[in-house]
Length: 130
Image (tube, rainbow, N blue to C red; front, side, top):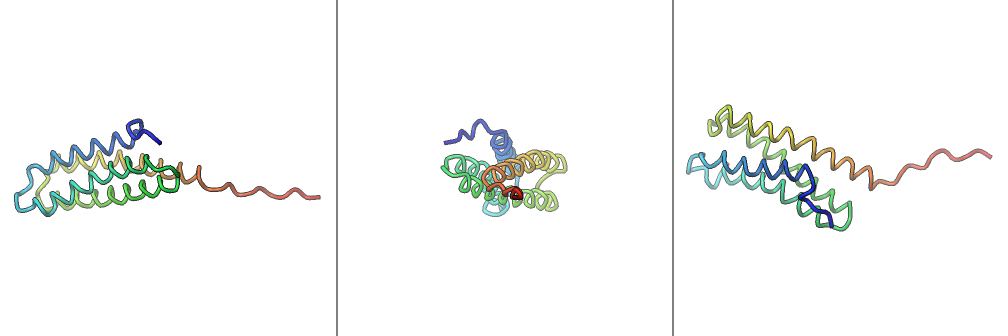
């Protein structure tokens, strides 16, 4: 079993979740079950899927959970932009959350690509000529 606490991508995703909770605490009460909930769920889903993937035996399953984490991350990216355009996030808040997103995304993509490369069978080289 892998230890998610040793992964840089988990640290980034966890920090992003905390930041999202703090940023959404000032959203209008009418958004409690709307955008506030959606953003928080997406942010927590990123970190939680990394954790769950680490608990899986096979690399294939691990990557499936990382793919889910990436989908949640992309969803959160949209929510950050939407919340800013709706005026729920200030420019500074949106910029800070987007910066966290921009740290997390390439790190997660890199891990997914590395694991896929590790798990894919190597293409056989050319056969020697007799």
